Image 1 (tube, rainbow, N blue to C red):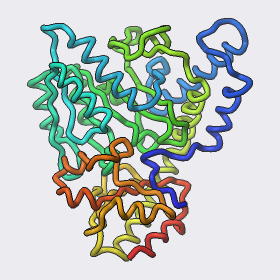
Image 2: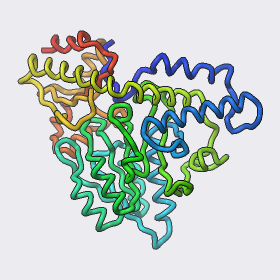
Image 3: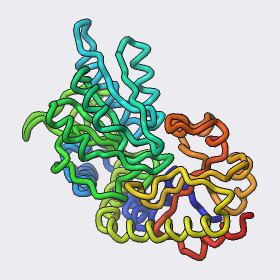
Image 4: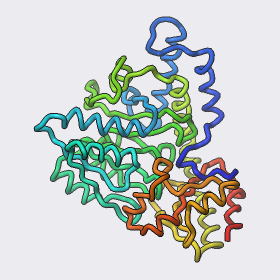
Length: 377
């Protein structure tokens, strides 16, 4: 099986699995317990993992809050900010996002819209990017409680102008959240330089880690003052009271190890993904140039993600026909039952949406394996 759906999930790396195993067997302590060795060992393992994630994205370790994944992280921030700062009758209820966000962002804002919040959904260009000046104009006028714009699009792969957006929200002192799930480990991230990003979401299973674990970065207001929001989960007060519940130590260790590997191998992985992507696109251009059309931009994009149309071919039928040989997708794994709202937002017709497939590569692939596509006519 040629696996080309790495934006949906990646294979857990052997080093990650090896790091996790002790915490599924002999090191089974609860890090919220005290004094005895099993608890202290678990607590130390969580602290190490927290630092490994912080090192990957360039923040303080106490700004890393573990969640079940980016979907929870997105919900936690959007709902938590809306409730804490906008729940009163006279509170600001303006929110800002784009029409090309992940379903866990779009549907959360729709949920808030049904409860009286005023959500502005910004248009995007043909590559699903927002317009910086348009965002700045709306932000200046509406002073939104929260703006959420993804770093890299999960279907087309385009990178949004995050540095410029960060600057806008730093200058306006407004809350800015970015879903960075698809770019962590594929682009350099340093939140100490991008000070306008107050919140960032990520998942372990997009970078060789386990499923069911992720993090949200919640930047502090100052060195000693934490940003306030309403918790999604109440209970024992774990994770700085942001997210109660017994910590999944084995998964947290897995996330930490995956983050450590991503940081160490960032440059080589990006270079490898670019090489594989160029090799693959050349195959398509040389063998199927009259039968395909690329949706992805050629620059400012996530390396290794290619969105293209097989003209006149239904994507679901094509994916099913090739399913014994290769794993492909038509777009987001989180909205597989609906036509892509992302492609629709970029101006694609329903026919174009229904002939689009997404190919997402892994640094561990060989060029020879991609020769598979020379046999498609």
